[in-house]
Image (cartoon, rainbow, N blue to C red):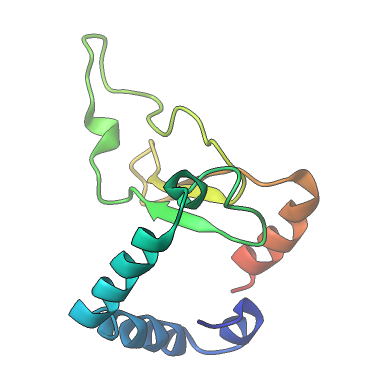
Length: 126
């Protein structure tokens, strides 16, 4: 675990190294422990990811940049837009390839309006 403010001030490689180290700890013992924890829970529905469990300041960013989503043709030519139909809870974001095929990206993101300035600051000045 790391606080975003500490990662924000570190080189990108530091964040990548922290992720590699965390993934190295996900072994059989870790997974068995997680399953034991789940077996002890009286209501697993309370643990399911959703609007009730995922609140700001959390971000869940999914990249669709490698998917050929703009190559779809439903009979009337290449799609102008392709992306998530809806974003069910705050903090969920999708990074999409630009429909213009210019190497650009689009981001579909659900955030409360008062959280947008902080996100823009982080996004544009990372």
